[in-house]
Length: 228
Image (cartoon, rainbow, N blue to C red; front, side):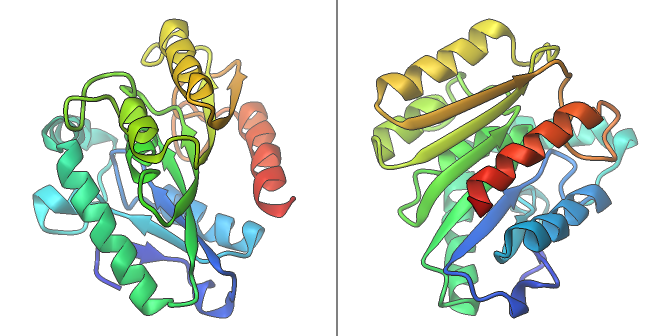
């Protein structure tokens, strides 16, 4: 795999026809994102791939820490939705070349990756999107549309979406959360939303806002989605 795709060590053992593509937060290939990749492969018995989308801008693998927050935000501000779409399409082709048995994918995104997950959902081989606290999802970002509007326009109702939010997350206020719900529901999309008394980036251990109760509750939802 190219350096912008980190894959679970378990992938070669798994024979599922569905893969999971993870879009991390703006710090990209961190230890906690790699751990999440391994945890998901173990729990859901599907090949899991972590995409380093900032490779588009830097030309190298990115493992940023909290002290590089300004750099991470600058990269986020400079990444265009159209660029991400091209990158994602290329990554899917490369994954399917290596794993030709994978017929479709679920995309799980965190933070900025949660916004990008809505764009990724427009890909014809993506059947499910899971977005964790995807900020900026209502702002114009790709072809003059928001990520949510773009997904609705490109995919119609042919997608399943689950969104997770922390009610104490100032980057996604109640009005924003409501607009996301209304747009997906009005489009006839199978949409579920889960909200917890938590802040931004509550799910993964290693983040300063990690909330064990909210994370555990979200894990149970994910298990229902992927393990039935």
